[in-house]
Image 1 (cartoon, one colour):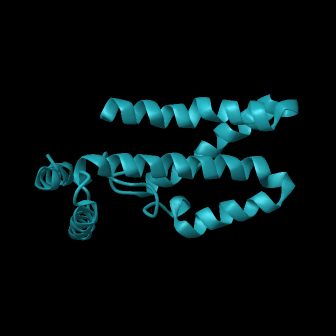
Image 2: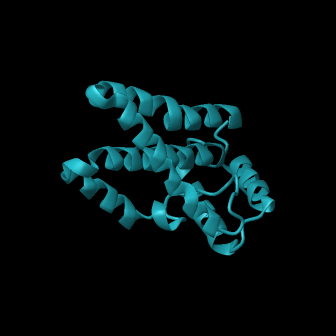
Length: 149
């Protein structure tokens, strides 16, 4: 599952923006693609986290530039033509990271008891102030608890 998640993640970060730039900004697609790639600098806020990378952490709502308020601001930037390409890039980045969050929950949730499993995951995230690799182990234990087969 981890390999599939990485392929999806990097496809959405590098290949998909190329398609968006070419289809929607055809006259200046190279410039648009470069701007879309530069919006990935938003991940600099990951450096503020301790540890700055954790395989079981969802970026959305955790990092300051990945907050819900920030996402609303990125959406409002669509209203201004000069910032439209930047806005599209930032929103595509948020969607990509949100898809990562969903893929993180798949092994935890199963299908049958998704809501109950999500509550367990939320409880787990409140207990763990500094994420460690034991968080993943605990997530696997939750996953085993809720497997529908």
